[in-house]
Figure (tube, helix red, strand yellow):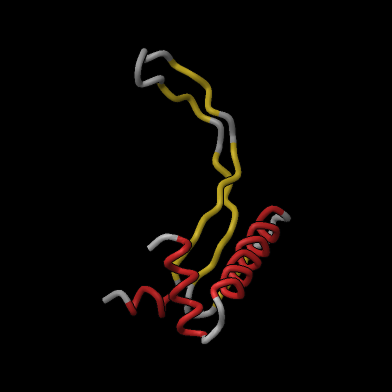
Length: 90
């Protein structure tokens, strides 16, 4: 399922237009991204939680040449599925 499929499915289930569904999804994504950027986390009961994790600097290898290169430390988004979501997949 891609974003346009998701918009269509949400519009149909919620009984709203695709424009309204797209606006809601975009607002949701922006809000989650802003919260993570500010160092917070987003927890949605029954679905899961979004948080930021720190990845330490490390030495990697260029797969083409085999030369060592330094990979910078980075902050990366992380998602952990909630119990209800995990149980729903069984």
